[in-house]
Image 1 (tube, rainbow, N blue to C red):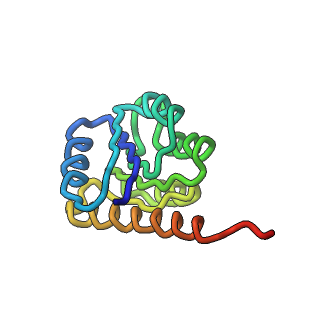
Image 2 (spheres, rainbow, N blue to C red):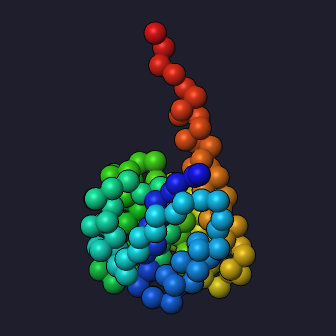
Length: 139
């Protein structure tokens, strides 16, 4: 069974709850889900162990999601990230992809679109894992 560690970060509890319901609908995967209501709290979780997928908001009090993306890349460079935001401005999307995020979605997207993006990102993680296992060191 496939296993993934996912961190949800948003200062709006109803968004965290909505994403958790979407993740609960995924079958045939073991998901270890963590959540935080601020980027600062998320950093505490990130420092304790590898995260496969980060799903974060951009605008949060204290530290924003873009700064969080920079930080997680320092700790776990292989982490995939999806930014889920209420802000459709181009400069946010540009900055998100400069941080190597896997997706940028508006919170107003249909739940099916959000779930499809999450599943697609988990597939990418799985493909990268398979590639790293198939590469053997030269002798």
